[in-house]
Length: 73
Image (cartoon, rainbow, N blue to C red; front, side, top):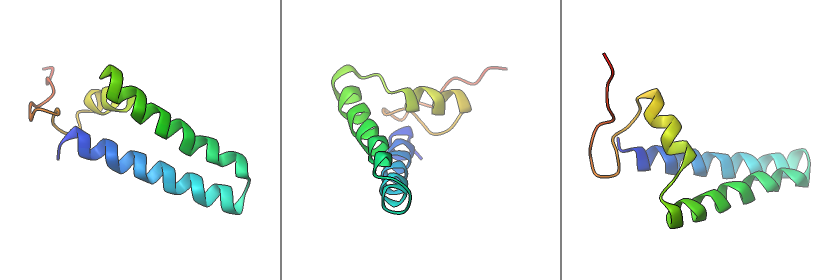
């Protein structure tokens, strides 16, 4: 699976969790959804995504161009 797919899964999950927590716990949890949205917009403009960086460090997914992340031996 590509890293972009993992990022979309992560972002969607965080938004759904945020909405559920806002409904059952406190409306302040909607700030998490706002943060996720702002991070997605920022990454579209700058090309930097912290989630992508972390996923590559964990060795998950391929790069956006189908290139596997480096494996250190």
